[in-house]
Image (cartoon, rainbow, N blue to C red; front, side, top):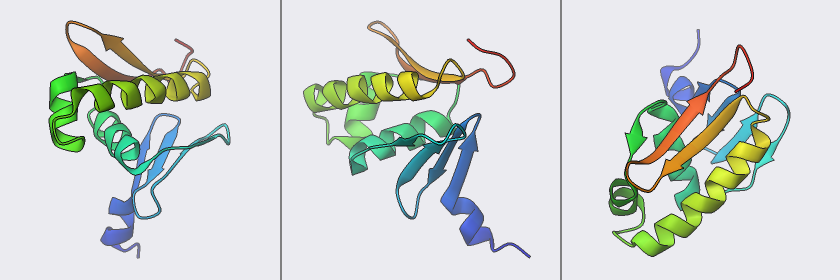
Length: 110
């Protein structure tokens, strides 16, 4: 029997696996993402709300104590890292007017 607590520690979204306890993010292609704690939190929120667009203000408030400049810089780096590691199977889209959206296309390439 698998412990429910352990299951809550792992999130799998398409090719992305997050381990909340160890704060690790890996792809099924064997790429480990190098993330600081707040950036890991942002990826966790975006991935668990796949397909939903979150504004910079929402993420800055929830994670960076309202510091939009720090949030924007960290999210820009996160999107670059995810988009590169995703090999077309996952990405973070950004729009100035709407915000950030985590997407996967696991059956086919984007």
